[in-house]
Image (cartoon, rainbow, N blue to C red):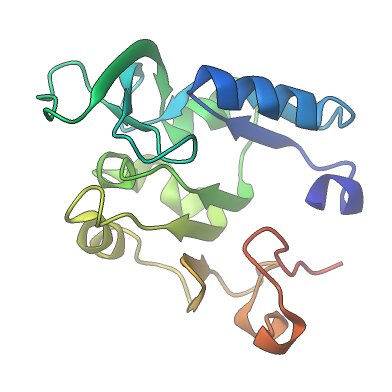
Length: 186
């Protein structure tokens, strides 16, 4: 875990769904450098509704209150939504070394206009969910220019800048590294 390897790192972990957030809080309790935040990553600072599309505890989605619900979805509660730049401001971060995004289709909204923050991210790791929200990949790739390296491990797309601590040369499929064990420079 990065928190063990880099105890001085500031790690902010967002989770909007109540049960998953309670699990996050228990899991990170021994790590003072991890701050759990019950909120959703979004394109504006507002509130969003948690939606259960019936995929299980891992597949909760968020949507704006104005978005039409599908007949198979159960509506949920409203939670705060935050932009990347708002998180950076609130937690006094000038740069983000690694930004890991797995937000079940909300990457479509988050990458609507990342111009306020994307140049301040050294490495971006994202799981794209076109199956849940068509157009996620197209929007992500059209709005994430400026990275020098791109590669993929499993469902995660990695983008990094030269000089970043996470580079494709450090990744080896033979080592069995997964998205949960990012190779990082010491």
